[in-house]
Image (cartoon, rainbow, N blue to C red; front, side):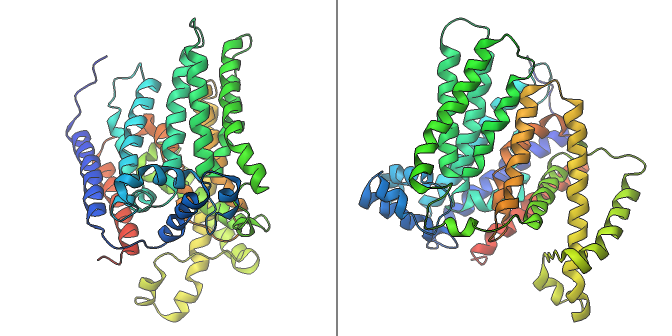
Length: 422
């Protein structure tokens, strides 16, 4: 089916997405600095793979790394090309981001078969997600898992399409999808939540035994890939790193994850939010309620751009500034949850949409149990899921062009901060 020709604003957004990716590629090529930030920690564990091979000893000796061994397996395989040197090791993630964009376009095309809309417009919006720039422009662990998780979604789409067809292609595709999900989990245990979320794919499928078989294979193969590793570790991460996950439930980290998710939605497709006459007054009321509650009891603090603010405002303002931002983020997170619930109810007859939405929310919710710190990189892993979910809500407009540009600029600044703008 032919797509409608993009209008001038759509062409501008498409050009911005392509230019953004090409710019990221160029600056990654120019980042010749040696390993920075977390990069040295992950690269050191590649030497363990050389020393022990893919063995129990290798898995038990992984150090200073919460994610699993997928990163090491990929860079070990690509070592003849990258020689484990910069910028080659960073270009691995930048190249994988391009593959993710292509897969997103393919997934969106399949989901909107009856709609004459560009699939590249929403797919390229991943470049407007600020958190993507850091994980794709450095040799960090998130992008490989995101690639394999996105590939698993695409394969699962095709497997489910073969539910009513003869032959074993559906089963074979389910097996491949499960294998890809298993690899994604070995890169980040957060993707484990895809497995319970996949049960929603069985809604409205009573009597469709082939669909049950395909979904069961998807979940089962994914578990078979990762459970042996988790048994060796005695948990979901290498034993030398497990201490960082020890501790209690941390509400503030989960709230931050959902607030960051809301920011992604605002940049990519604010049409997701349901805005009514009382929305703004209710949000203001929530802020007024949470302001004293947080200051006197919750004690949640968050201070973005703190160093810059210190140069502008007096010390008295800076002292209360973290307490002014936190209630705002709580209100934003609650509003995001409310609107997402309404979207769930609106599309409750679409199992694939519900699967993706539940997986997204469960991934954000994993931050509740990350006790040592909160990082926007945890939220970055949900970006492909957000892009798929938000695709029908993406609208080209002057305001959208501004949001797109702002998202890319924030992403660029967050990436270049690690390189000190050198």
